[in-house]
Length: 415
Image 1 (cartoon, helix red, strand yellow):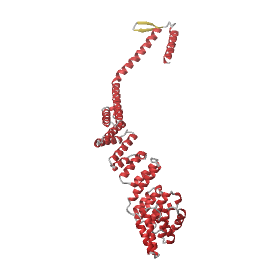
Image 2 (cartoon, helix red, strand yellow; image 1 turned 90 degrees about the vertical axis):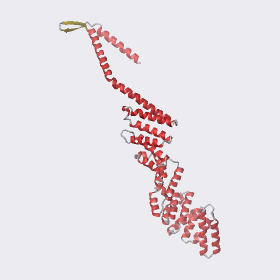
Image 3 (cartoon, one colour; image 1 turned 120 degrees about the vertical axis):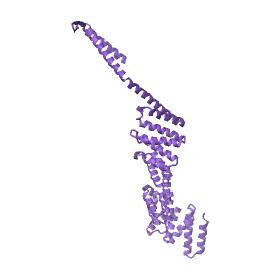
Image 4 (cartoon, helix red, strand yellow; image 1 turned 30 degrees about the vertical axis):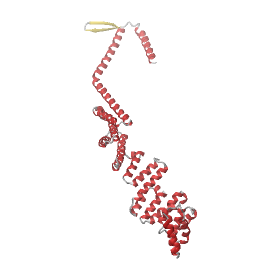
């Protein structure tokens, strides 16, 4: 297509030249110190055009000659940049091919080329990525001193102006990951703490923080991190629930007095306080710390919504209430009777109501429920044993020593 266009332009120029110059009889006369020169107008036009063309060519030639050193320097810099990029790509290929020694050498070669090329020294992002690649290769080779040296250089580069934010985040995330593999939770948390807020809430950063907090034995912080991961759908619902309950249990087991337990409970998320398993475990821990009233206070909202809980969750709440029943107040009586009527077929609820009635010394209501609980094989042995002992105490109050001895033997026979 371009050839056709040039051909049309050539024909156009030929036609215009033939039209204008074919019958042109004009003359151009030059006078110089007594000399006279006559030229045809056509020849003058041709010479003028040729002179302009030669002038343009001369200017271009001079420009090319004057800029040759600069262009040569740029060409050499381009070749060195190409060599650095080639070395970097080679390092990447070797790294992903699990040839870490070659990857380290290629990354160091790329860094050396950059250091020797002034035009490339300002590319902080390239330097940072090459340093991380060398550090990653050394990490795979278990050369920790050299790895830490390259990592320190990468972090130093990340703090300089000109480096891009994604590369900075990559350096700190890798530093945290390697610290965790070295079992150094403090260093991992320090690296994660230097991330900007947006990067710190990414799924990978939260996963690393969860591992670090668990390694550092910070169950409450680990619980909050796991909650964020669950909100990001980083786990399946079943795994998330199991993990959250486990972390909450670790946090509860770490308290040593009732006041510390209350502070911990206040720091839990609302979702954790509404979890029946977590609430039940907190109530049991409160009972162990002689805080029965707190245990009942935490269990009451869940006891009021037993119909919304699964049978397994109702069992957890009921078994926790058994431990918290000493000192139970009269405001619980309507709740207990309603639960006994609605869930009289569930041994755990029956046992809880029976123990609560016994704690209130309502022996007439407690007897039948305790007998059902004592004979329920699905209940834990400790719960059945407690029911037999309550029945033994009731028998002694009623003056039935033989019945009391029989109940004590039944309690002792439970493993």
